[in-house]
Length: 294
Image (cartoon, rainbow, N blue to C red; front, side, top):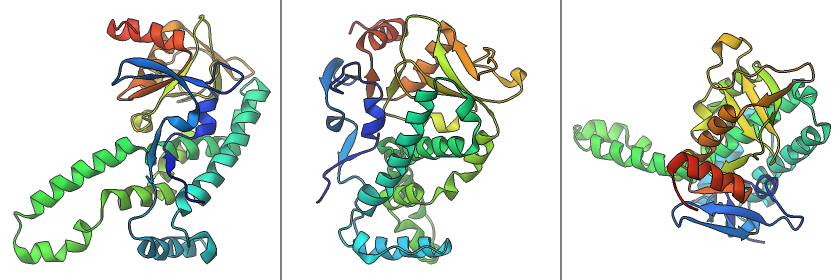
């Protein structure tokens, strides 16, 4: 079955921020300056977003990638041209969903001291960065500028680098979604930081945006995983913490103050067009941030 709506923010993750038992979520659409109450399947997607333009070329490439790790991919899993959506991302999201459920059920951060959970979490959020439409827009702009620059070079140089210029922004993004070596160093580095489960002191709730590209560059991360919990990742040395200075208790729980909550919200909001979570918390944040009546 062909999947038309391909989500760049996973539906299971969006549902973590539902305020109702029927899993409908409140989403603030910034360009329209309005809230909607909707199903997760209706937001944060693009049509056929991960489907390669040249299926034969993609299948050859993915088989070569798999062979590097002594893996094989059955032809029937590649035949329909939706391997990324129906196979790769489905497997990653299933694993991550189970991981997040165990973290939330434990209600403390002890489970986050297990490297298996750390790597799972980092792979998922790095993947949200890699599959973002905002990243593709960035690549499209960069590739356009590069093509214009190469036109000024002598013809023999243009011919030499023609194979580079032929790569599209979609092909570049697909390669980063599949090949985690692009982000491996960052994943390993953050796995060695202090990890704790963040909760709020004030009467607020966490929300998320639809743009995770900015978070990938931060040393201190506060990543919401539900309305009342987030994963806090920061250097072990307190002197290196600029944004989240709170102390962590023996159960690896960190209570965030209102300043840290606002900082976390600002990073979720950065360049996002959609905010998902509790309507009152998003409204309160937007009013403080922008003086905007919502």
